[in-house]
Length: 209
Image (cartoon, rainbow, N blue to C red):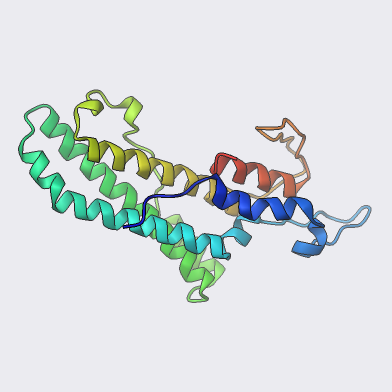
């Protein structure tokens, strides 16, 4: 099975050419003095791109890997555990399953929209029912290091996927306003009223760039 690869290379390959070309020409942004600024969603562009297909495949592969582990090697490992680790295993495996089901739902919604199976309004309604919660982060769980290494690895990778999808989701849903000042978390640049910089800032955070 292909390893879990959701790295900087994926998003850098998408953003670098954008940074080097004419934004208005690439994304159809019309600008003029006194005119209202046009919202340009890099998140929407990404969700409709080939890069999204890669993220989708990686996410679904992780879902399959987790299901295979919990039904196979994980089941055997769980039988060898004693309380309180056995209880923790049951709790964390349930949280892992729930987390991945939510992430898979998000990915399926975005793919359905990309393929034209649903429209933007349908996607919005379906997305509202998906809870992208971050319960059970390893650093907050007492005894996490006592769990089987394979489960620890899967939990950590699920959170890596979760954090990227949450940031991409924010980029897609964000409505950039001129009223509130914003600054790029990495460069400190003022992104107020500049939807391009604001969207790029969100995506940089999402993919560790």
